[in-house]
View 1: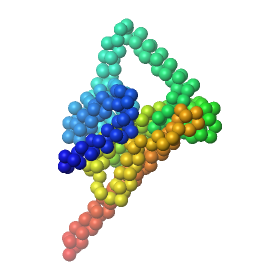
View 2: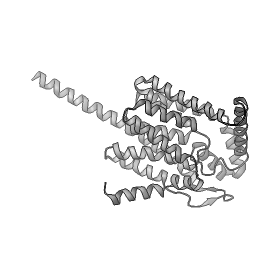
View 3: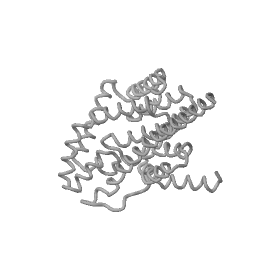
View 4: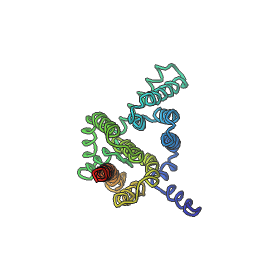
Length: 297
């Protein structure tokens, strides 16, 4: 890649939606992004101890990235999975010990702050503002239909199914990565999309994680019609989409667009994997047929 092309790539990334909003907010996801880069790079080089360590630290900083440890489910590399979870647990407890007060007091303070935060989301528009998740999308639709009352009603209903949807989709993702998906870039993309779509609130700066599967997609995906469609969806996902605000002016139209784009991308990745495995079986069958034909001749 020429120097001018490198500059253009960096410029596009810095002007993307997740990077610009993360810098504007000074969010810690910028640092978590670096941990994930190190973890995926180590896994790509089959340095499993280093990968488990980086991903364990990432999990300690934010819970949902624990899904990246599902990489070790493939090939039954349980000891590396256990190492990642152990590092996450040790780092979490070490953080509680570093605060003033006892461990029990710090845990109670954390839970109190978490409950307060969840309460504020339940009585305001914060749960929809710049929210990339499916729940944010549903609440935005409810807001379009029936205003603030519709949004709160939707959130009340969703609050009863959130934990079940997270557990069910996590189990389905683990099964798919264990028994079906073998491509690292597709697996990374699906895990990242799970993290972005399933939690109740996922602000746009967390789309930053999508840049890693995008880079792997560019590196590994073969040039096909399917790849072109997925490239368009990657671009739409990270592009700014705040065209206008509606209702009281507190919610912009992008919340109606981000989640469907991510869902379409997930479907495209799964379909690409199915098509690739089908093509591989066809090639393998053709090769075996040629070998048998040669042997008979």
